[in-house]
Image 1: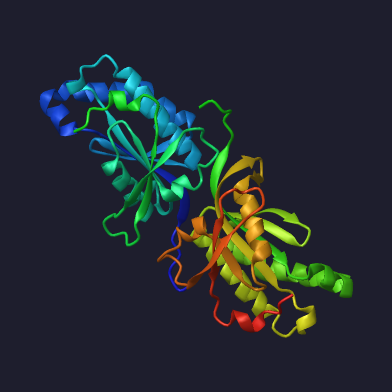
Image 2: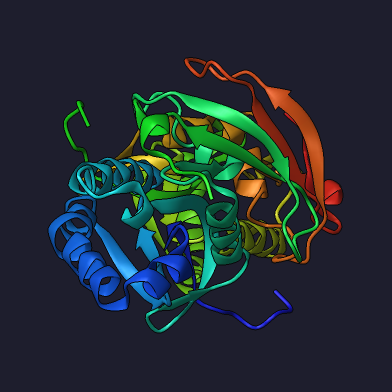
Length: 185
Length: 185
């Protein structure tokens, strides 16, 4: 090959962030940060461990996690959304913490503990356009889920992503009862 | 999740076999086995190491190898086809060893050193329908190669694979000068 070799790895990338984070912090900074810390300790970290995921990095109110399997990544995303919804069930809607999650499969560039490249950018973009409380996955991730997850997946169109020439197929994971807990921005 | 957890891994699977192996062995058993052994030692094993691949298993005249990246797997497949063609250049056509190689991306089930599931079956099927001396890859592998390999890829239609409901998109890697060394069955 003419190009220099770079370390690459097939990874399922999960990108998550908090819906309306700035608004929550503005209302109650200490309370929001404490609630997020509790969510992470009680819900998110145990689910990541259970599904063999690792946090790649935390970015403001968001996080990027890596899994060795798409099936594990999407199962984890669904479990996180259900776990967070249960834990936040009694919190008033205007102070409730709700996540958006995107999952993509990529042949990513590895630099130490960090991951770079299209695969990461697409996961972040999916998360940005995901409905609150939902899980949005790319077509390349979807292709490896069929018959392996037991959850309905719904085609939600092709999306154009900045700096990516080809459109990205997107699929929404249909979570039972999820619409009830959504407070759209 | 309702289903029991199984260990899964995203893997690029390379399946290879020798074109007309039975005929070659019938003509000259000892010579064919010795030639294959030499090819493996001089060409294939060094290229696998260079591209961070590992042999999962040898099956008769074929082999299954695993890579952590699709880019590495296809680059290795191309390098193997070029290396084998160079090494066999002076061998008479009727005794020449020519490989077929299929590459697929799968979220496969891991059982010790072995890999199981659709992802493996599809790689083997691609290899069976690949032209002699060529490299045939699946659509899900192709989706992660764009702009990362520097080799032209040609769409070669959708194929139906036994026990796989949806058709598999296939792409041929265009190897410079490859048609000249092909002896079709």
